[in-house]
Structures are given as structure tokens and as C-alpha cells.
Image (cartoon, rainbow, N blue to C red; front, side, top):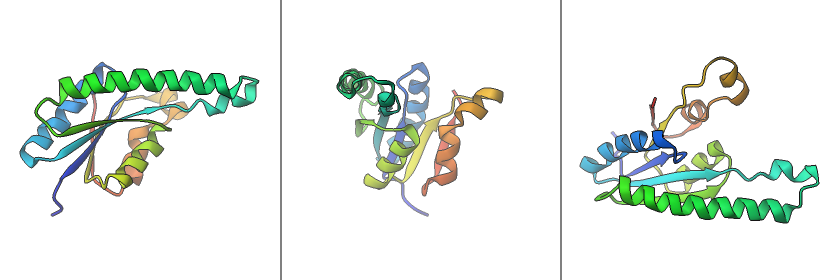
Length: 145
């Protein structure tokens, strides 16, 4: 059986993120595993064709990244006290960001939440968790908040 030394915990920094993070922390503690906590900021590049200056979009995304980094620092400090944990904020589509960090950090396990979308919402927006489960090369534990 493969040992679990690195856990990826993608979050959206909502209230449900703390519940998902508790599972990652519970698993990491006895395994002495490192937890990477990931937040993906959308690039907004899809709006560049609407005569919006890319400088304005870049500035807006930059401000979101700064705010997300501050929120991530607080989240990791508060939620993962006593655990080897690192917060990561990147500009990316969530699925691609999770895939990228999983490869870069050689992740052994992904612990992530689901939003439980159903019906039309699920058809329109899909499920990041579902895509990760289908395409990840590592085990994925999904938590329904």
C-alpha cells in the first residue's frame, strides 16, 4: 500500500471549507503528512473580448489574489495549527489547478468538498469534484458539507 505523505486540500474559503479541512487535518495528524491547501482564483480571461482593458482585468485579478493570499494565511494558521501545512493561491480553473498542483507537489491524496449541485445547476456548471475523481491519478476523498 502506498504511504500518504502529501495531502492536497482544495478549498473555496467558504464556511464549508473548514469542515473539509478538518478531514484533511484528521488524516494528516497520525500520518505526519504535509497538507497543501489550494485556492484557485479565476483568470477572467474570458472577458477580454468584451472591450475591457486587459490591464483592468489583470488589476482586478491581482487584487483578488492579494485578498485570497491574506485569507489563505489566516485560514491555514487557524485551521491547521500544529500541522505541517502550506497555503497555495494560484490563478487557474479549479480542475486544472488541482491537476497542476497534484503533479507539481507529487500529492498522494486529495481531500475535497462537493457542493452537492443537482439538476440544472449540475448540468450547467458540472462538478469539479466529479472531474477530479474521474481524472486524478491519486485517491480522492470527497466530503459533502
